[in-house]
Amino acid sequence: GGADGSLTKAAVTGIRTHLRSSCLTLLRNFLSVTSGCWEVIADALNQSGMKAQADRALQSSRQQLNLMQGGRAARNRAAVFYEWDASADNSRAAKRLRDTDDAETRVRAAKMARGLGSGIQLPTSMVDACELVLLNLENLPPKRPPVASSTQRKHPIDLDFVMDAVITNGASLS
Image 1 (spheres, rainbow, N blue to C red):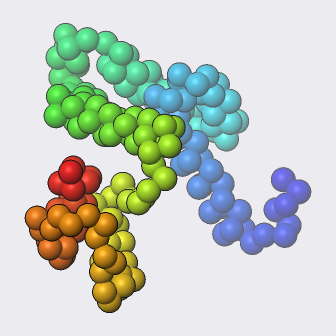
Image 2 (tube, helix red, strand yellow):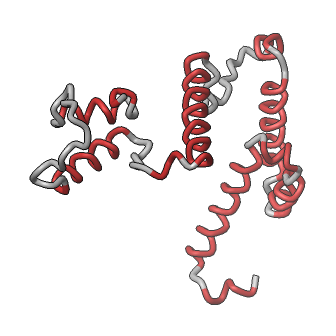
Image 3 (tube, rainbow, N blue to C red):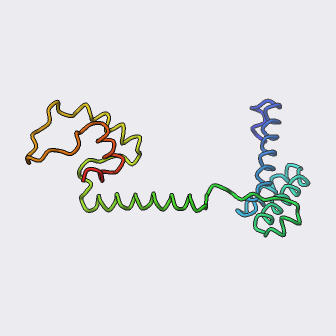
């Protein structure tokens, strides 16, 4: 077109080749059929003299979509194994882990809503919580404040005691 004069012939050829190959790649993907953009892409390829390649690419993407939406018998007839997207792991262990994580999040949110979260706030990550505890050990006073009652503590407060309290979310303190 009008921009041909500002680019070298090699650059124009490279751009056209890249556009054609990109259009063919897009047309081969089944998403071009489901989104409805295959008409625009096929028309662009037809105008550039690539009607046969465009038809084969469109046929390939439609076949891919039919196999994906079809059953096992259709894939067996086509002698093709279709691998489903494995990004969503639906195994029982993963579901149980998700449910546990969701339950912990709900418990934390409920404690915050009741005002129970105004004490020591530990991060949700165990590594971050341990680092926070270790960093704050330096801030402890050199001498313990006097205990109000005359009862002695069952445990001395040391690193093991603090780590046990962190790991059990404070349950070991009671």
